[in-house]
Length: 162
Image 1 (cartoon, rainbow, N blue to C red):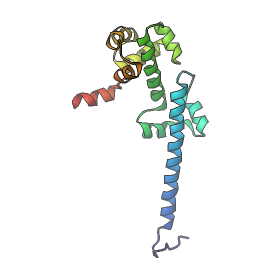
Image 2 (cartoon, rainbow, N blue to C red):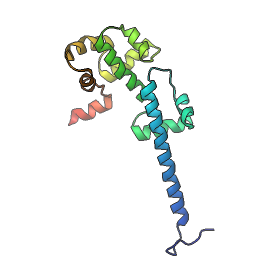
Image 3 (tube, rainbow, N blue to C red):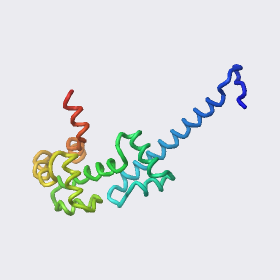
Image 4 (cartoon, one colour):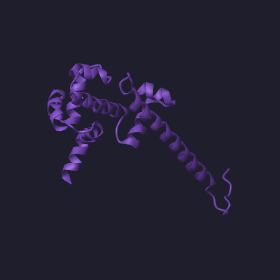
């Protein structure tokens, strides 16, 4: 039975439901930040959506939907972006082979690594190593990281229009 609210109008249940939904949304956002922070810390470890979801007590489907809604990309895409960013730094250093860099950042397939690298960076890892070394020579690593940050294809297209 729906009771009357303090103003004498019906609707108290709707307010309770919306407050409950907002509380759940805030709990989910806190859990999503934990997942994102774990990816940032453990990018080189074998991570998959199921393990990430288990770690915060969510189903993998719910985690994927909520992560995409909150951050604009899937957990896997976010993980690969972190791995590629780290690979870029290692390639600029120049002391590891591309295969070693691939495994160092947590990728288990050189083909997948090279394909994803080219998608995000716009060139192969070997070409990147050649060109980036010259571009960032003498630059502090924290500045080089910002200057060479990968741009996803959808971001590149939108920034080209402006």
